[in-house]
Image (cartoon, rainbow, N blue to C red; front, side, top):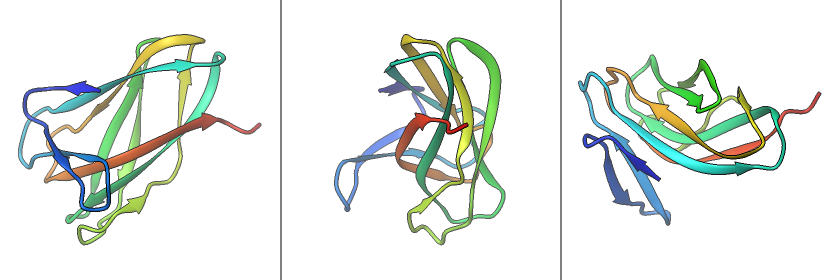
Length: 118
């Protein structure tokens, strides 16, 4: 995992790390390297927190230019699981990028990627 200079990586009170995308930044991001077992459509869900309505994160992969939007519901700062968002991956090692464009503060705890059921 790595990211833009504006993200804040912190220890999480519930274990592990969390990434905070600070308020009012024009562009902040984090990127992860993964090894997909096969090419195809996958679903990503995130465990995130926000204290404002209308928050979202953009998700994309190295292999495809299309960016998907994951809506982060206003959770009063508590962790919530997002609705699944479809992304395309190629087989093998690649990067996925999570962007937080001009948000009012979003924190990401974790995410899960699994093959999309037909």
